[in-house]
Image (cartoon, helix red, strand yellow):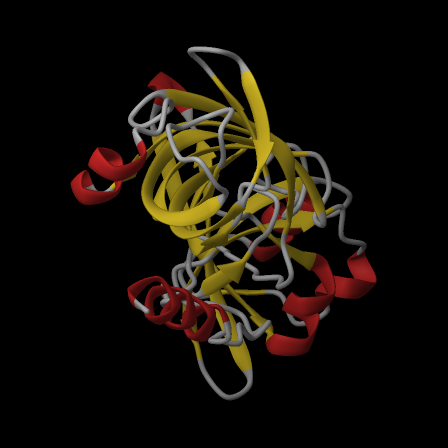
Length: 258
């Protein structure tokens, strides 16, 4: 009964997905992707900066910008330039919202924190090298580290840590029971996900399963508390844009085959 309650709770959590809009974010980092002069017709400086001089620097170039303010019709953004003696000079400009969207691409967070539900369908158990499959469901937290901040779903590494409940099948080969039975175990694991595409990731995890003291005294499970290695594929079922200016939300990612 306790196992069913935990599994139902985790499944309810997995059903909660917070939508992420694609609006321009205040304090968000973006880059201009080689704009043309026709795309900068409303390019204006908010200080005494020479517009034409900066247009020549921006047109046909790739420049990083930071959004400072957004109102009903325009975006105010900042461009940083290195000047003599290694100092940085910041200049502020405005563009219409439509023009900004046409030429700006987001720079995503280097590290994206993720919380989700996972399964480990196959485990290689040490101390006898038993390979088994069991029902395993838990929650995990991960830190997805992007190699390229300009690509939302490019190659990335994600260290993870998780815990949950596993259903362990006991028989004469792995315990002292005379007949087959199933018991619940608390499982804890850590590992890394290798993000190859947005939908498919390779997961390698290492963890431990522990059944209750009462069950262990009854069945003497050989692998209680011993390490296991999990291999599989992680499938993400929801997409989320994480520009560095985006306000953080309690977004829950649904994963399986961790």
